[in-house]
Image (cartoon, rainbow, N blue to C red):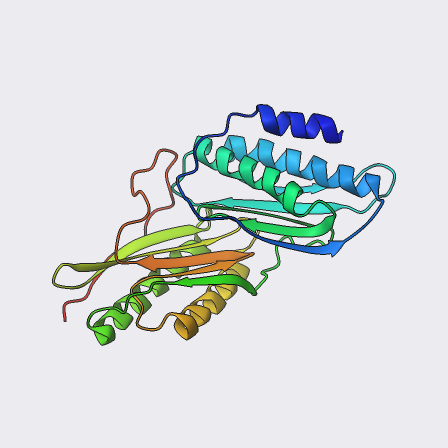
Length: 254
């Protein structure tokens, strides 16, 4: 099974990822000499890669007939990605996670535009409100008072659209002043319901406020949700395969 799984991954066409972000991995719950668990992990990775290649996300569980531990998994691709780009990103994530976390029963890996997770504990439908990493811009925003107001109002609209939408993805833009516009995005894994998604995003927004105050860009990487704002456009409004309808743009003139 292991050889067939890795042959499948190797033979899949891998598109060049649009991001140069070095993957960030967390490997937990190490185990030894459990071939059935290894097989279950390989099977769920196979299933998530296959599902992501068809619909740009995956929610999976796999249990062998002999009663070995069930493995649960989920993937997330940025909502404006094409199915082909999502498939390439998730395939790369599956390859890397088995190399980096070969004996882990709980593993997570983040790229800029996709995320993969599996665990022997059933986490599906439950928001994980911890955050793996925060990336803040090196540069302070011009007119910080107006910028902070613009970001707060924009992210509030984007988060609400994300939690309420079936794709659990929202984006928008907000004019701050002059030629300055801020762009925002939020996303949850699609196993979450509206309340769990919104709760995760609220925690992410608090982390953003704590770590990125007055910075002109910020990203919060979580296991169940992700939020980001920048002063440049980093998503496609007209992507093939379509993202969810954007949150209403807010215009603030200061």
